[in-house]
Length: 575
Image 1 (cartoon, rainbow, N blue to C red):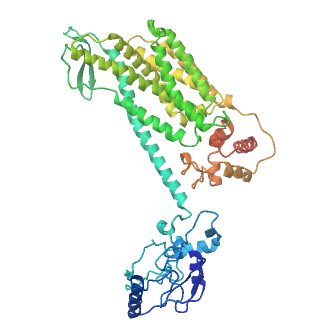
Image 2: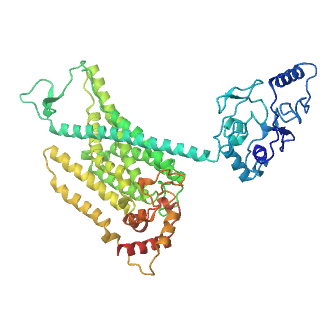
């Protein structure tokens, strides 16, 4: 209604401010003529007498100095002023009958008072409830403008931009601003969690590699010393260090004792929220792929969380069973079989990218659980035994050392899975499960060679299967294996290619993305101009034609015919 009032006043006559503005709320609201101070004082006095004296006004009465009903007086069921009810309601209400042009023009118009500059759009002003006295506000020329508590001058209509006055009205870009704030929060959560996750992971992996090396490098002291089991001399940062492995006298616990456990905890406590942020709260954009399976995002989330819990339970049960005795060869073989089965199953249920990351999350969860469920309890038993003056249980120490070795072997495969989202040629491959298994073999094999050398028992022959596995991965991801058949047909016009990219890719890869997830072009790749498209023809070929993992999860519905059209155009560009 206020839009009509403002538009009518803007386009109507202004004979002394007495033009009647008829709204839809049964009142006749008007701008009163300016009067001198004595008239205004007399008006307030009469009004106060009517409000507080015997002649209290009845609903619908009007002031003696007004030409229409007083909008400050109550009407039954209407509140203090009809304009208080003139707000933009939900879709389907009468407020939406206001023509869009009038409503938009009024939104741009700014203030409705006399300080509005003709021909200039003013910014939206906040609504303020005025008292009975004049509001002293500086005017353009340094003076003051008086504002009465009139329904038009004091109570801002919804189109003047104040949420409290609008009572439910939001500017048309409010949703966009909210989404931008949400995207900003998600972006910085992503950055912060990744940063801390990387720092904690470096500390954890560094200490793990160091202590595996240290245990292998300790030697018997020469000459032997009391309670010294082994020692190692180190040279670092311009000085010599002597590290000893000792037996603590009964009841004599050294202090302080430095533990190495919080690095593992912090790595998991930042890694799991990162998994939730990227894969579980993005409506399945990264988590599922319709070309892989028809699983829903909710089911995929349950699969991912269940995998982390069940994998640790099965692993721990296996390595505490009789199969883990006598070197644990049977348990090791069964563990490899189960790992391959999990990799194959995940790559046929989740998207390739999500499957790789979840395999890494599974191995990382097992590693953290090894630290807190097996290694740390064994260390607490050693401390308790030293305080009580008794011999500690060696079984716990042996099991802790075994789990620490497992963690060391899993380190390199986990590092690759955490980096795999940067290499779509692996997770986007038709045989992505086989590639991941081969890369796990490469990582674990390299770590085995390192540990064997540290122990003084070189096992360089392991480099043969490692090299073979790596060569197989390189061949599978090469153009020789992925080469597409030759395509014929008429030449493809660039306009047709641009149309496909505009409909299927630009919603994300643009300077101003319209996608509901991405507010910034992923990896900074944009296709707004012909030059930017031609500059990335190889990337377009790899992601849309060869690997077919773009659009992400085929969210925009790129068809095989459109991929074929892009392939023909790319072949022409290559020639």
